[in-house]
Image 1 (cartoon, rainbow, N blue to C red):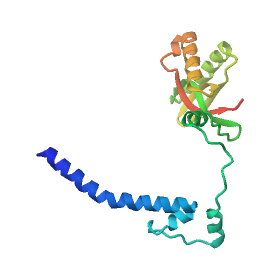
Image 2 (tube, helix red, strand yellow; image 1 turned 30 degrees about the vertical axis):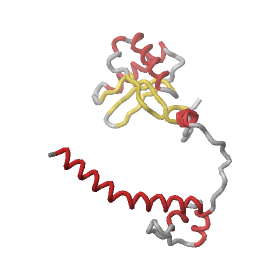
Image 3 (cartoon, rainbow, N blue to C red; image 1 turned 180 degrees about the vertical axis):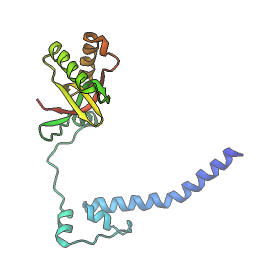
Length: 177
């Protein structure tokens, strides 16, 4: 009985959706012929009209040809992963968090001690002690890929087995090199 009621609901929904799909198709084809955002919104099938200053409408209606070549899907994914967004010389990347604690008495001292130890063992990796209430944190490195950060985390765990349980890769704003 339950299967037949699901089937009946599906049939009813598809019958209702047919005119909507046809309307959407008509709106898309009419709008794509005109080519602008405002034209697509103002299409009779959309039921929406734009009221704005004429200068703004003129600016929205301008359709400039794309200067970029057509890119295949695989290339799009490669380029999306390589996008670098900078703000003040920083970009989104990865760091290895070696320490994080909120103990008001000892956290700062422990973070600084670990910073010195890691800095001596791995002088090529930058160390960053930060305080974001209530946590003191020690993060290491500026890695663009998570893979590189994981390799460094593995090296840190081997070099400092006492810290191994706390070592983890985190997303952070990194310095651009």
